[in-house]
Amino acid sequence: MATPVITVENLSKRYLIGHRSDGGNGRVTNLRDAVTHTARNLGRKTLDVMRGREMLQGDKIEEFWALRDLNFQVNEGEVLGIIGRNGAGKSTLLKVLSRITEPTSGRVTLHGRVASLLEVGTGFHPELSGRENVYLNGAILGMTRADIRKRFDEIVAFSEVERFLDTPVKRYSSGMYVRLAFAVAAHLEPEILIVDEVLAVGDVAFQNKCMGKMSSVARESRTVLFVSHNMGAIKSLTKRSILLDQGSIAAEGGSEPVISAYLMKTLDDKKKALKAKDLEPFRRGEKREGPAKIVAIHVPGRGQDAEMLPEIALGSEFSIEVCLEVTHAVAAADLCIILFNADGERVTTLVASDRGTGLSLRPGERIVTVDVHGLYLTPGSYYAEIWLDPMIDGRSCDAIFEYPLLTVANKGLITHGLERPWGSVFCKAADWRVDDSKAAAPGALTL
Image (cartoon, rainbow, N blue to C red; front, side, top):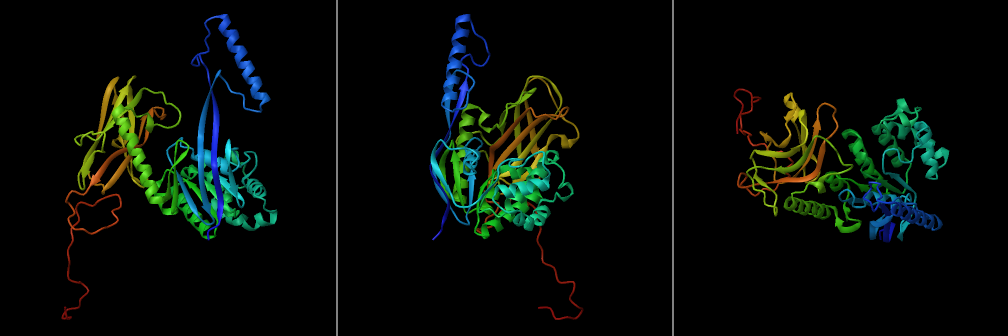
């Protein structure tokens, strides 16, 4: 019988967010309002201190539940995938499981040591060298100096930072940070390994190396929790996954059906966005201010029915239109469109500046069209990541992520019923022939 290593029961995490009633402009209309506002804030902050709560700015308090009533178990030797859109609660859950953040209610039971790789630099002291941080992390995990010394050479070889081992880690690049941090977390043999999307910082070769290491960790009966936006990585590494949506578990079970539920949820979001003509659900991070903004995305000639994605036939070429709202003229802009398949694997990258010059954008509404020739996508759904950059300073004006762009369907081009793994690119023209073997000796018997 499988032994639960992680048990989560009725877990919730609440944050209090302060808002200013004046909208944040700091203006008060008269002396009475100023005195009342100051007194109210002083009284509330005094109560916060007396109750041991964090002091918040503003005179209005909003409750935000990052996690709400989560219940699940993870067994020994299991690799569990955790997926969901940004803001769904994935990182908060991992911080609670790593004992970094205290839950508001509920309980978590852990059996064994926990090593976490949550974000660049987590658990590292910037003034210490890479060598010293390896020993520091081992000590935090409860290991003796002799145990760490046994695995030290493996850690250094895996991380590929031996030349910089005695350099303070504050001088490391983000990729070097991640390589050393993952090597430490994986090789110091914790019973539970928690890995967030931070692996995306590393290069492709190192990501593949980490995937292999996590698989070997699971084979050693250790438990792995893995968060990623790369559905291909989730599918290949995990058998069971959890989908989080607004702090709650929206789906749980086999990785393939959970991934399908996640993609359908993204599709539903697109339908709502199309109806409202709103791209905000597909923007991430801080708000960007620039001379131009992406306001719409279309596949022309394929219909724009909000109830379904634009569909093209297997073997067809297609175009993509990106509608821009330009407030200030841009002499040379760059537009980058990255296509991903349903597994989150990159299919191709289309870059406007590859033609040698940038795009000239005058103020007003502009439509940038890219006609995609010679790229024949296989049946399935495809998503786009779009970046708009002025080529002068390189800072992004706008960026759209995980935008469901189109589907490809086999409409009779392939008529036999053979099931095959399609991959992502379809070869439209392939000539097949059978020739006599040139190695046959003269006079040899030919069957």
